[in-house]
Length: 584
Image 1: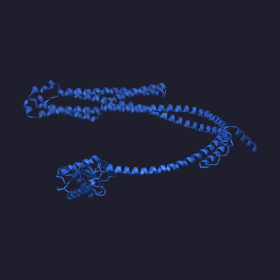
Image 2: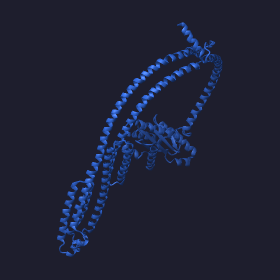
Image 3: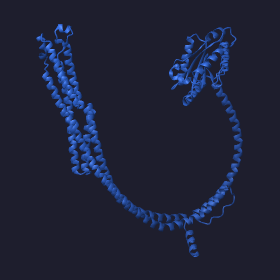
Image 4: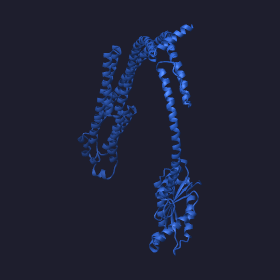
């Protein structure tokens, strides 16, 4: 046994790593070829059954599509019948042509039996012919109703055939004539309703109106017997009650024939198509189920066959792979330990390699890596020392830059004269507060303030005095605001206060407090300084622009009421804002 092991090691030592991998590769290729041939035979057989299953499913899809097409043609035909849409007629014709072409293709490919295809053709053709008859009848009846009733209405008696005395006296004759014309219009409407709905009640209603028409006609003639010349106007105009009656029953008969085609013949052909498709689909489903069972049985047999072949291949290939792997892994484990020590910082010299193949070259590379690693560590120490020096300088410069940036940010958001928020900072703050108020459904108010008659202060005392007034005013406003309120200069002599968590009543109170404080403040001038204030609160869907515009309208209202007062925006007082009147 020891001798056999030593012989094996000696043999492996004479093979390079590439040669060992070649032995393993050839063994693997032979095993894969064996598996591939066996799989090909099984897959080829399975593919034939899959083709049969695919053909059966395509046939099933064909008949399912036929059933859907029959329903679609019936639906489109119904749309044409009840709505008269030309697009529905084109849809029926298009579907019929499409499925005739598909049936021809199916016949060429033999996807269904010839007798089944013949039955489908017969019923599809019958449906198309019936629909053509329905379309023609629809146009004929529509044209007949329009033309015949137009002629009858034109020949019906009018008020012109009355004597001047009867016409002026507003006698019952005029009422009878109006009733005759009304009944003619109603008869036409009932026939059109019967044409659309096939409701027999419409026929009875039309007959009732015909009877009433006769009665009013008789009464009109009896009432006008004294004027025989004008009574002859009926005959001269061509109005004949018998023709009206004949026209009525003639159209009723046409509509009944049309309704029979629409409600009986055409649906029955569509149902026959659906029945044929369902019958064929049922047979195809049975065929598919049988194929699936057969495929499952063959698949299980294939699995058993494959497992046997795989077991045989493993018994032949595992010893070869174990032989190759062991001749590679043992030196690699040793090499792994060497690199692990190097990664931990060891500077010990790497032992000489015991193999003379590619793995031996790796041991040589490990020794070169050890020497290079020592050199890089020395460079790294120098780099770290230099890096710490640079980091200290960068940290100091960063602190100085941050301080300057903070000062620039403060100056960019502060009004230079009043040291309050400027217009840019107010826009950003208002947008942020409005988003927060809408997200959490909290109240938000704006106070827009304007110094009354400030132009006179500038004109009389100069702009420097005006600037001092602005500074003093901003201080007085700030002194009378709450800690949560945000004050800024909106422009010129206008100031804007953003009041978070503030409803209408609270905003009015803050505004009045500020107005009163300004009114009694001393600005070092002979005249008093007063301000007008417009108040607005956010409602659902408010934007920043709309909120400021509402406050501006309120400010304008305060100016128009004599200045030195607080006014609420008109939109703010609507019921939409009532929920903001509750305490925040």
